[in-house]
Image (tube, rainbow, N blue to C red; front, top):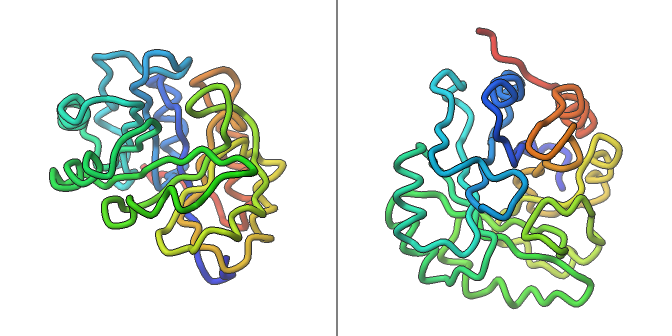
Amino acid sequence: MSSERKIEIKVCGMRDYENIMDIGSLLPTYLGFIFYPSSPRFVCNDFRIPQTLPSSIKRVGVFVNESKGNIISKSQWVGFDHVQLHGNESPQQCRALKAKGLKVIKVFSIHEDFNFDTTLPYKKEVDYFLFDTKGKHPGGNAKTFNWNILKLYDQEIPFFLSGGLSPENVHEITDLKNMNIHALDLNSGVEMSPGIKSKEKVEQAIRNTGREARSDPS
């Protein structure tokens, strides 16, 4: 990580209207909303993003093994500009979603024996990768992985770093020199309960990355 590069912040697993607005007031670059019924952070099928959420915040729909048609229809209904794919989605599906004007974040679950060649077929079909800890659930496992394994990644496609990030450990990203980190993905490490984020923890996590927390002037 270059000291001059600004790493963006994504807060994922948002669900409650007031909590969305509370965290939104800090103006993270991204907020993520999970459309996966088995997740404790599932938003519900008729979920809508608050209309007064600052327009500068990019809206990310999170899906697991959903059909292309369902992802597109949900994205149009809710107003997503990015989709985050946590399942076994193919490069062809990613390409089709990009063709619809969506930015695509493809997730890979990282473990000690992970082979980054797995990412190669996706390079031309996505905008970002997201590297998360392999665990029981597709995401939100509250565990970090050994970041040293990222040295084996060629850094060609910018990535989101996820998995157990919290105010207590985000400062350690300073050890990840010369890596193409686009954003940190905060979720379980800043929660009070599943789907409900602590504004104080999010703000402290932002500060501990070396950035100043922003606030919505309105």
